[in-house]
Length: 127
Image 1 (tube, rainbow, N blue to C red):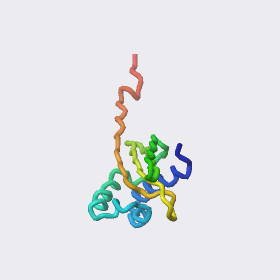
Image 2 (spheres, rainbow, N blue to C red):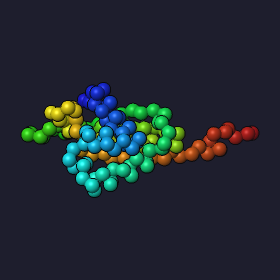
Image 3 (cartoon, rainbow, N blue to C red):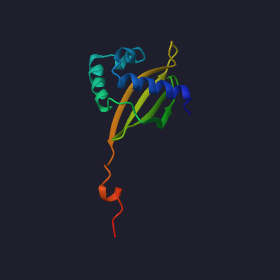
C-alpha cells in the first residue's frame, strides 16, 4: 500500500506540472520522459488544470507492480477537485536508488467536467 510520502511525491510531481515547473519535473523524470517528443507531449497536459488552486486533492486509486529483476512500479492517481471539473492525474513511478526514492516514468491526465445543476433541480417546484 502506498505511503503518505508516496502520495506527497506524486502530488509534488503533479503540482510541478500544474504550475509549469518543467525543470523541476525533469529532475525526477526517467530517461523516457526526457526526450524532445515526451517533453512536447507533457507540456499540453498543464492546460487541463484550471489556473486556480483546487478545492481539494485526494488519492483516487493506486496500483503496484513488481517483476523479478525489475524495480517496483507504483501508479498513483491523484484527484484534483475544482468547481467545474475533476482532474485525475496518474503518476507512474519506479523505485530508485538515487537521491529520490522514485523516478517518474509516466504521467496521464484526464479531466471530467461536472454536470451543471439545472434550475429545476436546484429549486423545489411551487404548488
